[in-house]
Amino acid sequence: MLSATVIKAILAFAPVLALGSPVSAASSAEVEVRDDNSAAVEVGDDKSAARSFQESCRSCQIISGSLLSCECKNTIGQWVLSDIELNNYFANDGFWLQWARECVSTAPNGPLS
Image (cartoon, rainbow, N blue to C red; front, side, top):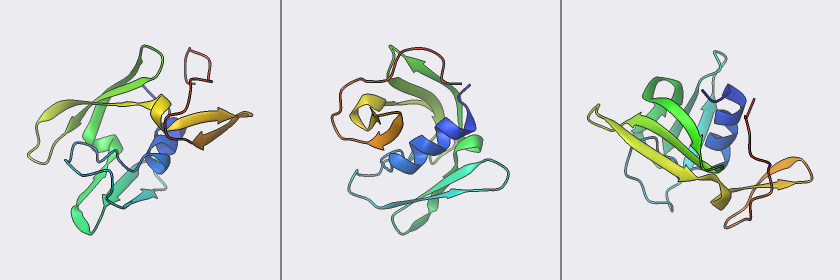
């Protein structure tokens, strides 16, 4: 299971993660991190698109070093496999996690926490 800190970073920097909702990458997104360590993403003006990551995704794992894969509920409540290539969005810039499109792999493989 991914740590809450890693999940928050992914949600904050990767607004294209609509958590099971079909949304274009051009949509705007807002991330709300709550006191109970959960996070919700609101995509565009559609309030119904907001979902708690903790409540709507499960079985997250890193595959092949940089592919984040989770089962996430879609808008009709079905669990579907969803993934994102982290190297397309994140870079390690002198030990600081940075947003970077099409960046190269700079973080070592291994456990996240």
